Length: 427
Image (cartoon, rainbow, N blue to C red; front, side):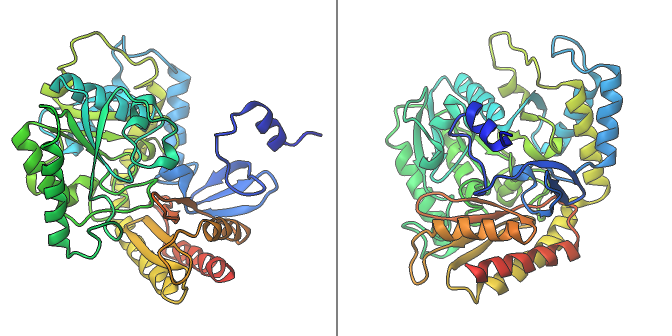
């Protein structure tokens, strides 16, 4: 009998990555655990790439989906849609953007694509600033602004992109500076780049914490300092909150709030966690920017009644159970535990992150060189121990990515840390 893996390889593109030497078929989940087709149970520390935000098979979400599907599954944005309006109202209020408007998409890629369309149209410029080591999706325009060559299959782009320093604190030419000096140097770099552009620049798009790039982040306040420069030039700031939003960092509901001294971003993009596995993405922008689009537009699947019902139920659960606070408390314990483990392992260069968004950077001992083999080996060993994690990294880096559902308990955090400790020591 042909295996599912063989069937996958026969019909799915080679560039669709699969984890593990023997790929896993996940059949069901509950809480913070999932099971594979062979009946093995795993503690899930990656949540479908930071997407299962609250819990697997959360009753409140599955009930909302089932009830809405029993009424109507689809209508499109050509008709009034009560669940879409209700979720948009809540997100607009939570966003911190004055006079906010919300446009729903089906993914973070599409959300960032829409934000770029709005910014370039509003500013009448195809020049965009992005951060080195960044990742913003897989569409043609999103790939064109991605500063991570591992996820950028073409140099062709409808945009002229200029890359700014600052997304990575502990590597690069400014790594040895103090936080204040680091921010000052990055601002000077931004000013220098703007001196080389032809007139107006549309926007800076930036992840408050870089996701695919290995959960790296600048010192708090960098983007506030950038915003002061951008505002002088009329340049928009797009905060890519696809991975950092909804309280995952623990300290803040949005990643941009660590850089809030100069106010909220002009645009905010979101996806992943809000749907808890359902396909929801979107853009929040002021009415002035959002309504500047001078052509008709719709979204066939963005704002689907079923996904909106899931989003409302999921957001309600998140807020009512203070999962942001849980991410802060349990995530704080987990990161300190992992730092203690990493201190005794030469291959661990750094344990970093906030809340339940934690990265473990691996290097060849005694060097700063990425240890890709170790990352793959730890991924495999963790799975054998009953733990699913992710991996990533940018230029010459290799990082284990840890992002469990925000309802993670203290005992589950300790269990996962013990499995990771064993996996790291084995490697």
